[in-house]
Length: 150
Image 1 (tube, rainbow, N blue to C red):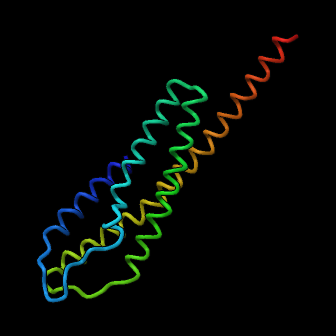
Image 2 (cartoon, rainbow, N blue to C red; image 1 turned 60 degrees about the vertical axis):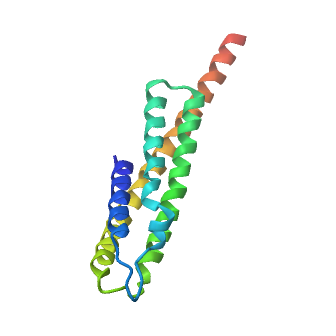
């Protein structure tokens, strides 16, 4: 759900920044927008889908896939936080015509900055539970092998 929210925020930023008028001081194009940080929400959606599949049909392969996707989500969230902080820490003046759009875009970035740690925490939690699930599966297979040899 957070991933879908991020994608919609990126779409809002796309509409917002595409409507800028070239002025004397230029347009406002932040680094997080150019990198598509909010569009990375697709990674979180795919990770959520892999978690649901691993929950419904638990197998070692699906648990490993879900864990890898969650690790990718953590990396994406950390990079997005860094890029958004860099964006919010520096602000070059823009044309007065684009100032309102730049200000609104920065507010959207602040909202997304609040959601990135939430995504990081959720991904970290599911990664831990995936590791626990894999360890349990390995213990169960070793126990079954030991019982079958006896």
